[in-house]
Length: 455
Ligand code: NAD
Image (cartoon, rainbow, N blue to C red):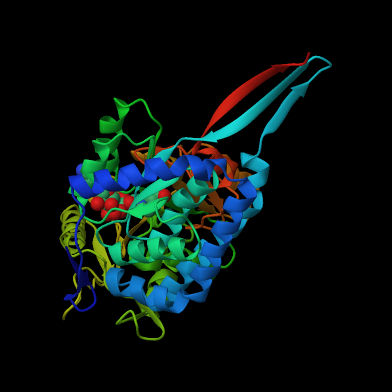
């Protein structure tokens, strides 16, 4: 399998893909190694995970360069991602004993009732490329902390990073059999679905998640799907600093070239603030530099996948045909590499593809709405349910709106944000189950109930 640098379109590596036989061998090794890992004290498992985190930190410059070379993310954003992963690991290790330790629920003179959180066994993690460290850590760190063995299938667009992660686990002292990488495209992911894993944890698109959930259902094992989004954001008319709101929300829409599951994908602005907001938004966007992701100060690098260019152009042309205006950008940038012009569309309507389908790129539609009720109606009009955001100076007004939107996360005066302490979970086509927080730590366990009658 060739690894292509999206900034130069050059081949930077050729990897050997896994096949049915190598996957089977890996599964056997995982299965053999897991019971001893489960038997280790939680404190020992925490020590190994902390060592992994220290290695991430020690090698962060090189790891960031490797990530940038295969996904095209600006170097500063790759470094931010690794720092973010280290912060998440720190929360997970600090809270592992609290949420994975045995729980005494009831105790009377003759009876003790206790919950023990047992690992599932050997789990498969089929992962995405847009934040391989962050979405990877969300799964394999709590899974290992809980005593599972992990087959990690990085995206075919982030395989070099996947191999680095595997190498660092070994260097951290984890038994080499407990964490293994499966290299290859979707067909390798599909082969994993034919194997007897004890749980399937998927991060990726709705289309693949739908396929995976159907395949895994017959196995009667846990399956979690963290999928895409079409995340709405509303700017109410009581915001005081429109320019600051425009700058913050533009970053929420365009960070990582809009290739975040929780990127802002649709913006609704109260008519009293609309013109000022759009002007400030476009001005902010134009102040950000596009260029080689290794260049200093670059905010927009190339997209990761070539295919995405066509999808964005199709969404824009559908919108324009239906009456949208291109305020800035609108097409692929000239020259080599998968660069796309950051694009703002106005005069958008709810029936346009760009306001309904996940764009996963540097394209945003901004719609004028006459009041909160109109904003709520638009925000709710989606098959997805990952996040929703409201900017307003009034917390009651914001929370009253957020309560009405069926999404796993609500943001007031912020957006495109993840916290290790809070559950990360989608609804509807954005998936189900949760990573991070106490829910995410326990997502890789089965509770066993002990009823212990004293003599
Ligand atoms: P994708 O669905 O194309 O691929 C994800 C993974 O699934 C890859 O490893 C791929 O090889 C594998 N795969 C593809 N076809 C398969 C099949 N038939 N059977 C088994 N595995 C298969 O998604 P992507 O392009 O890697 O990621 C982008 C998507 O992920 C976006 O929709 C984004 O919103 C979503 N995402 C969601 C979250 C979240 O936390 N909710 C986080 C990051 C990304």
